[in-house]
Every structure is written in C-alpha cells, then in structure tokens.
Image (cartoon, rainbow, N blue to C red):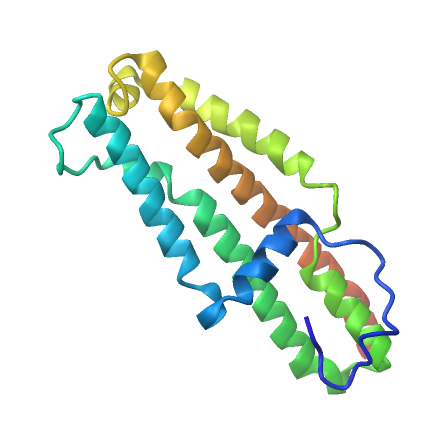
Length: 192
C-alpha cells in the first residue's frame, strides 16, 4: 500500500505478507475498496447451502433455512474484520505519525508490522479452525445437524466446510488483533 512521503523503493520488509493480507489487498483494490465483496460472499454461501437443502428435499424450493445464516457468516465476517482493523491501523499510524519520534522508514516499518501477518504462518489458524469447527459440528444435536442433511452424517458434512472456514477466519482475526496490540508497544515506546 502506498504511503505519502515515503520512498517505496527503499523500504525493506521484515517478512513477506500472508495469503490473507494478499487477499485483503486484492479486495481493497476493487471498486468501493471491495466492501461489497463480503456481503456478496455471505449471500452466495447462503445460496449454496439453500441449494443443497432444496436439492435434498429438506425444505421446499424457495423456503428459507435459518441455520444457513449462522453457519456461513463467520468466514466473510472474519476477513472483513481483518480488513477493518487494517484500515484502522493505517489511519492510526497517519494520525499519530507526528507524535512519534521516528523517521519515515521506521514509521512505515511499524505500520507494516501493525497491519501485516507474516507469510507461511496461517497454518496455525487453519489447524485451530479445523479443530474448533469440527468439534462444534460434532457436538451439535441431531436436530440441528438434520436441518442441513437427510442424515446426521450428511448434515455434518454439509456444515463442516463452512464451520472450518469460519473458525479459520475467526482464528486469523484473533491472531491479527493480538499482533496489532503487540505491534503498538514499540510505537508507544518511541513516543516517550
């Protein structure tokens, strides 16, 4: 991301950005900063669940399945939350720039560390998301699981990918938030 007053060619990055940061960056470059992508993904995911439910005959075509709203919410919300906190972090660095006793390159480095997850480390979020998502689906009541499938197993298999994606996105958001909180400590020290 371009920062005014900073020569972008001389900045060294302490680490490459994660796949999540690259995805959020691509979304941000879309018209309207891509905010429309998150509700679109939510709507398409709900439509996908409904198509599966209708195809199985669990509900008449066109009838709403309430379970779909919760199960598909967390993945687009988690990515949107990361995007929101990135924008807030970038804005905060701009606002507090004058108060920090740091040169332009140091400011840009702190900003980068504030809003960027290191590449190659999202696996921990995937592992956590898979474990938590699987546990949540496996501990649901039979009635809840049967809302999405003709059998408990079928319902669980339909819900499982959405649960894993949702809890992975939530884990990434938590990790991102913790990193942002930790990244503010050197800035506060530089404020003295």
